[in-house]
Image (cartoon, rainbow, N blue to C red; front, side, top):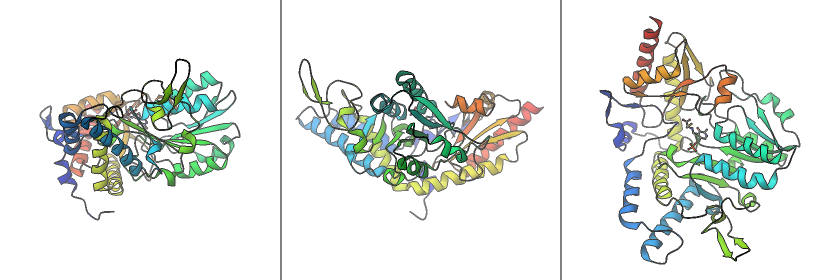
Length: 410
Ligand code: C6P
């Protein structure tokens, strides 16, 4: 881990941050929705389209070779980024959502039967919930949930033994909750599941770009994340799958590039990962993602995690001075976000007024509607931090929240 990082110098790498919104300097605190992109990522995309654009794996001309090499180099870089054993364990998708849908459509359809149980947590984003509901309807499998304790949004693991029955075939869980900031003990949970022969999936949408990820140490069978939340482009995502598990799975979609031979009545499919990547893929996406991963690892994700957590803890301390504020999320080991409500003020009003002051927040159910209902609310306002945010920005955010509270209280 590097000892010191010049965080404010890093801000210069993000041209978008240097602007005024509604006459105020932009304070971008919606990083859990999507992160901003450093110049190196934008440059990588421009370079690819300016000099190397061609289709991959098909041509034998120079541009096609360059594009193919860059595309496959991004796959190898991704394997390194999460410490997968091999690049063949990396499937490019459109994002976390598609990664999870791919597992549901292929692994799920092959391995689940009526009466089997898919175990989730009550913290899940709709992306790690709706695909399993759809699969359960198709296969006759059932869903069960590890419960959360109230506003802290921490898993109540005292129920785990009774939930881990012999019917459970899959444990699929979020690593970091996007609406609470909870960090789940995924390595422990994967180890418990593995002993019982249960397949595991970790939704890393909010973790991959924020802390060091080692899928082998985590012990999961699948790990999903999105490029756009880790300084990469939109439209590119990753599904890691352990080779032994991928090889049991039928293809996702049929088409070009995923086949070995095709006859009029029969097709032989390629091995992973190509079996799961039919058609012309997003090529610039992995190239941009490669640049993003290089950028993040030059800073060091352990450093980023420390910075994220310091900002979140500082925000929690400062928000304690705001009247009638209900704070959600864990008391310890909070990820870099704060979710809250002001008494009798709709989260959308908080976000709209904050926007007028140049502060970008998110308000809503954050695609965790069942969790919101469990907590007895419709929505929360959320500030989510990344390494380019500063304490001064947290101060501005808190000052704005104080003003909004006073405005509605008067
Ligand atoms: N959460 C947020 O503002 P996609 O859309 O596929 O890139 O990521 C989906 C997703 C899956 N899991 C978790 C834990 C997530 O946080 C997200 C995206 C955004 O919180 C948009 S709702």
